[in-house]
Image (cartoon, rainbow, N blue to C red; front, side):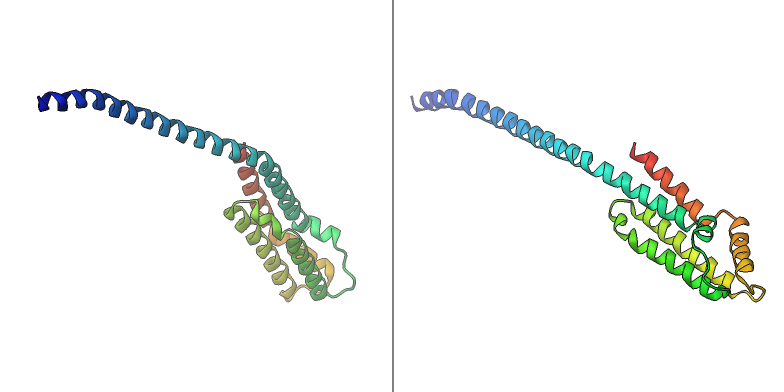
Length: 173
């Protein structure tokens, strides 16, 4: 008789346990899907805000690179005297000032893009310094010519960085 009672209790309990486990599994799956959907919506809303900021950062860095390119820099920054060393220092100061003005943009661009911008700036400073230290550079005109020659023989550092930034922006879309 007792065995019948045990089977009877099991006959009622086992389906209830199985039903409870199945319900718990579906509830957990539904809850997980809701969390994923909610996180996706939050990321999507964040991208609506972040994408314009990132594009603006790329635009500002592009403008920076254009402004420090030798042809534009030499036209924009006029020499105050006849000393090529002083003019070189003035150009380097302008480049550094432009760079500092755009430092905050690094949080919106990739690390490799920021490294490309920093490298471009460093190479431009190096080109200006080396041109001003050459013995045959006596005046401003010869200094400017030397800077332009050093950039014309190879792809300019600003052009290489600009190309890299263009590729990065294309990846955003």
